[in-house]
Image 1: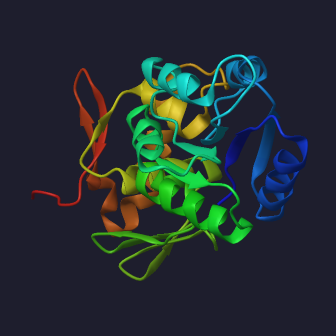
Image 2: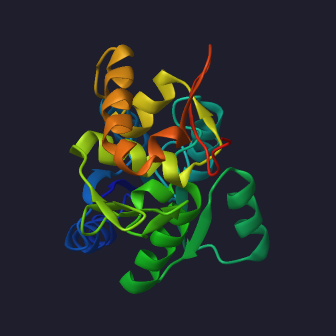
Length: 231
């Protein structure tokens, strides 16, 4: 599944090589050569993942990673550090600063893509192409097909994304604001009641197989997708 990836790298040749490979893989790429540019891009659109060079002019990538983790808006965005530093202590410093993974230069495009997929699968599974199944409900993000107990179900694109997020984060309660940020994107400005409208549409789409009962309203908190339904 296409993701928005911010590449923060001050060496133009490396930055463009990474960007070309990401674009070829179907990702949207944002480019920055220092922390200032990265900040501007992040304010406009929160990326799904950040590839962050350690050695940057001005503020280092290590310091920027710490700042990202301290900010409520960016603390959950996956970060992969790119660096020529290969010592064990350097890797520990990068991970302790909040990086999810650490790649030592030089690296192959194939390794980078594998690391990105692994981090997204762990931190943001709704952004991967992996098929998801819960209680007989099967969602395939590649073919954009949804079936319940073998019966084909039809949803709109927003409801499909909403269900994908729910199924990959089962049993967790999400507020309307959190769902807007995760499914619509924090750069899209819509009212919170929009979530309620799409929840109703999603439940209606799941009614034929009874899977609508897996979407629970948690009074005063938001919504939760449960793996098991108590009759």
